[in-house]
Length: 202
Image (cartoon, rainbow, N blue to C red; front, side):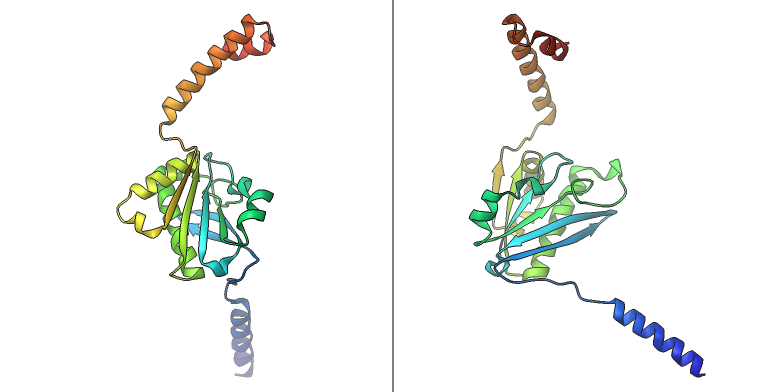
């Protein structure tokens, strides 16, 4: 009987000792990382700056496949972090995110759902009254547009900053091709790196 009680006590202490509440910091100089779990992806989230302001600027990066940490530079840190909390979310299969790569999960609909979940987690962690502003750059512009086009999603955010977003990737690709051919032929005619440009034009 004593052996059973000791074993039971051991497992109880092990389970209780292994459980701990995730730390959420409200302050003016916060830097914390957590992972957002959704449908097979574990997406990295870095929160830096003034979480006590309850104003969150959520960077939605380009790519797809790059990282929001590209925006985490000195200028942003020095000019915004004392006033606001900056949220760097890495989309599924991008940046610091983890999980099995699955091309079937790389849909605009799934990524829109991920973004909505990220906003809900911010409000749960830092307070329901927190204000969230989206900054969508390049593919992030397309993603934030898709997110805001879904009924009732607009009410989840307080503002939207659109930076050089793309909405028509096939047109973007064909115009880029046309431009490269035109610039390439001009450079070939002017004998400026003709070998490089001939290869590109071909």
